[in-house]
Length: 158
Image (tube, rainbow, N blue to C red; front, side, top):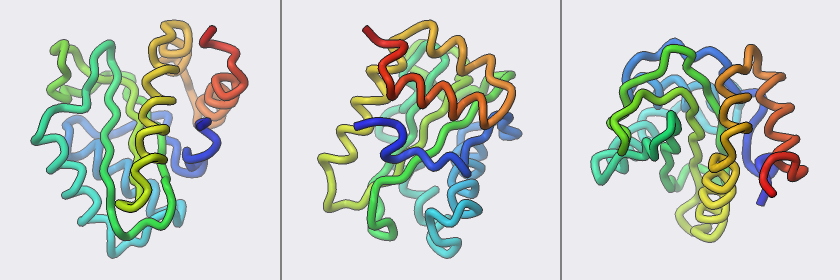
């Protein structure tokens, strides 16, 4: 699976305004609403589902990265977005560090394979320090989109 299979480029946020976990998740889900990838009436339910998932254990996986995610019946296919916080956000990360890179995904409950493949792709790409550094330095959604395309074309991970 590639980023282009599930990342909604219209929802990419190069400059998150949010400064705490619930706000980050809310802002990212709202960007998917604006991009017409999820329905506005489902926004609160999706945010709640992601927050409930966060209660099980933070999706702040360390090294300045978080991958908030959930399965939700309101979506008929896997959808996701990317956001960058230049300041970083306290996300209860496993390493205690602030998070700058966020990959949020929502998938239908009946498609667990897609959900796992997306998480696998994200985690594989994020192991590459160069990819992460470039993402953190991105100044625009277009910059982020280009980096995702380069990652899809295996220009980072060997």
